[in-house]
Length: 133
Image (cartoon, rainbow, N blue to C red; front, top):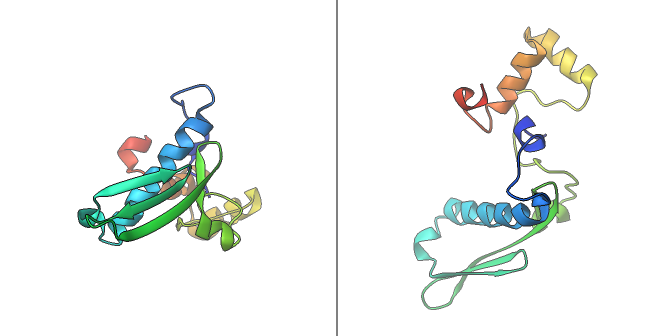
């Protein structure tokens, strides 16, 4: 599931998916380093296309990540592709996930939410309400 802000955005260049995609891959890799508590031990990061390697000061490998730009500024990791992920956002847990208009309407009926309220609740996964509005 994607944020509406991922679909409708102004890019830094006309064909930004090939420019911004690697930047998003690098950002995801840095977040993974942080998640593993390795940021403080990193002395160098090398990028080989979309392959990232972090080393400590003695050049001992800390973490490797392989990421693919799949167009539209979206990135999938090697692990996501190996696990069969065929779309972006598979690692995001939304409060009201849906794959069709029928599912969206059913969520609204069940939870007494309008389409706009459902979309807002899902968007809150990525941004706070003030930024969305």
